[in-house]
Length: 112
Image (tube, rainbow, N blue to C red; front, side, top):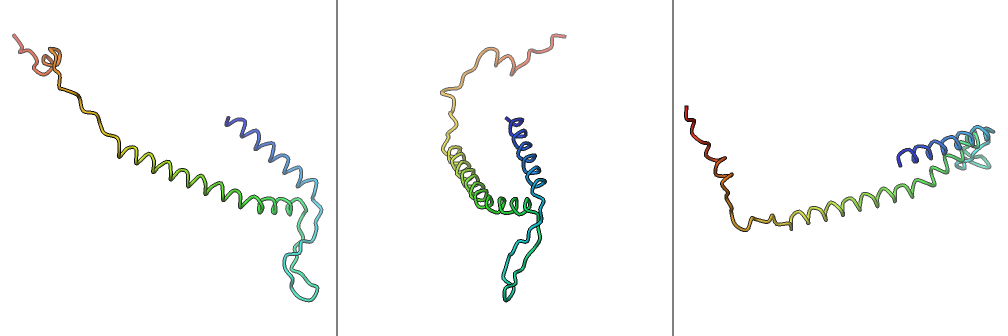
C-alpha cells in the first residue's frame, strides 16, 4: 500500500512540474487596490499562481481532516481508558497445588 501511495504522489508531482513548466508565461496578479486605478501587483508565472491558489483552496479541507482525525483519536483514547478502568482481573476460583509445584518449592537435600 505504501508503494502505491508513493507512486501516486510521484505521478502528481510530475504532472504539477509539467504544468508549471508549460505555463511559464509571466502575468501580473493584482492583489490590493493601492490608489486611483493602481493596484498592488506582482508578476508571477501562471503555473505558480495556479498552484498557490490550489493549495490555498485545499487548506480548509486539510484542516477539517486533521481536526476530525484528532477528535477521533481522543475519542478512541477515552473509550480505551474507560474499558481499562472497567475491566476486572479475574481471580482464580481456588488455589491449587500439585506435586510438581511442591517439589520445585522444596529442593531435595544433597545426599553427599
